[in-house]
Image (cartoon, rainbow, N blue to C red; front, side, top):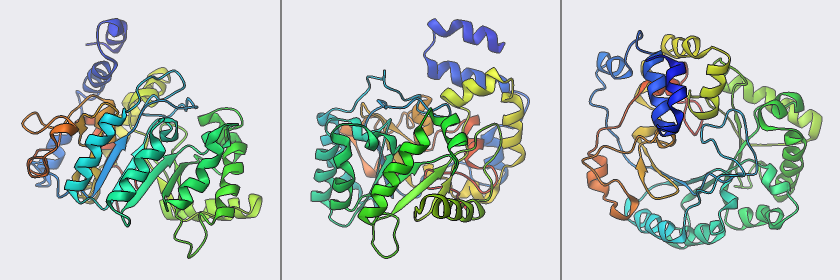
Length: 350
């Protein structure tokens, strides 16, 4: 089916179905991801644990970033309720995960955000709680300005998007004045001890490529980031995570607009790395959507690819044993996680 025909059918198909159909059409002449895994004896592809319990508390965001695979923004109304959060808390008690990863949208915009964090802390004082912040929300003239202190009080790990150490490149991806607002918040976080050595307050930054290419070497980019941010703004942080843009939502729209989807998919295929494939995040992560449905990863969530039908589909029916026995749902977009050094929500895989 032609891509233009698929796009014209937008009023009749859910956006996730359109995206999947476009990816299937575009990649019809290249290898199947499942076949690549079969060639290296990784099929059936199964989880090895649930070390990271990732919860998307809503798609509402104060920004509309052009590379956002969540398609988040100020007009999104999908926000996790306290009832669904309670189901998540019951699952957290059962699963024994090492890390709770709270994401969005801007997770801070969920009205129950602080309550949710406090409840997780009551369950386990030592568990790592990650908050994926866009930084700019914390610079707004509202109660969000108080959140850095809350982060510190609860010893939260912060993973913050900063696509570049220059204003020009950051603002291109994230909007006007995004960089200066991010720097403003990073200074506040540094003053609280975040990103500083031996404070235990971890502040990690995220780099996403600004076009249809793979990220550079994570270690070398981290050196560049640390040198430039220190010299120009006296800023510090702990680690840099490089994350490959997957052909989903706004980045898929960009690739179609620039007629680069075929090129990008071939680029991902050519860079397939068997070592990265063995350690992709879906093997030790479970993703929960704002309405409580279960997914193998955050990317599958955005494509509407729920966990295998033979296992519980919703967080209220959470069952560790059954979920660990499932087969992971795969697609052509998975090439994005196995290209080069690999890509996960915690940066490169290898």
